[in-house]
Amino acid sequence: MQLAYARAGIKVPRTSRRQFENLPPIDKARPGDLLFFDTAGRGDASHVGIYLGHGQMIHAPGRGRRVTTSAVDLDYWRERYLGAAAPAP
Image (cartoon, rainbow, N blue to C red):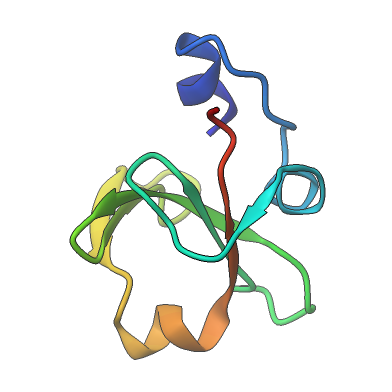
């Protein structure tokens, strides 16, 4: 995420946890906003995706795996969803 936003001239913290803690939260995600999830079960953000709109996000599902799109309304993501943030103005 940090690299993707840097290419657009927007600075974001390096880790998903710091991004979640420091970026302005929003109630409803728009395309380009970040979606945060607790996939590690520790109560904090351990995974982040970029919302594409129409219920889809782009994310890297794990180290060494290809970037992919996923539906955010899948039970897996809904159960782990923490919130969204808008790093872009």
